[in-house]
Length: 135
Image (cartoon, rainbow, N blue to C red; front, top):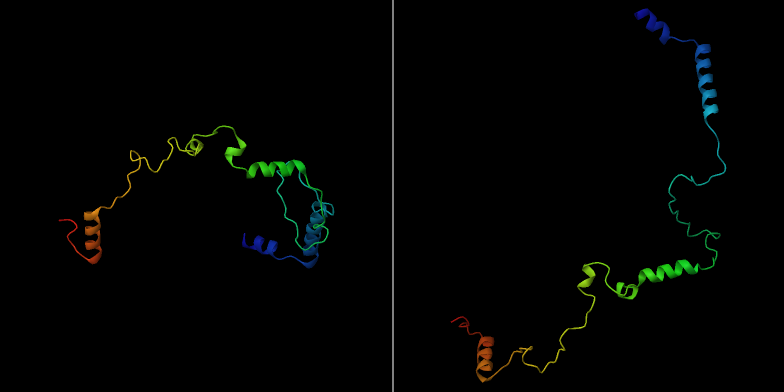
């Protein structure tokens, strides 16, 4: 068995040249040089960005009215797009007007901090550093 492996391993130049020729012809048969490129119709199309410094890509193109309307519609907020809420989360802030008129002088709803003589005195004492706040 060792003799057979040596015979296979040792090849003369003519035999090696024939093997290389067969490989070269096989590569030429399978390779094809493409000069015209196109998009595969069976795959999804991905946007390819243009080169910013090329002159032919920076030519003015006419505006597409349908596309501009679509963009302007997408920028608008949901209150401008729809007459009523589309999701439950939109219901939270859909009507921002308060249900009750916020009258500032109505004491039933507004409990402002009121300072009288004793509260002003104690506030001044605390600001000077008296520590008996919790006594």
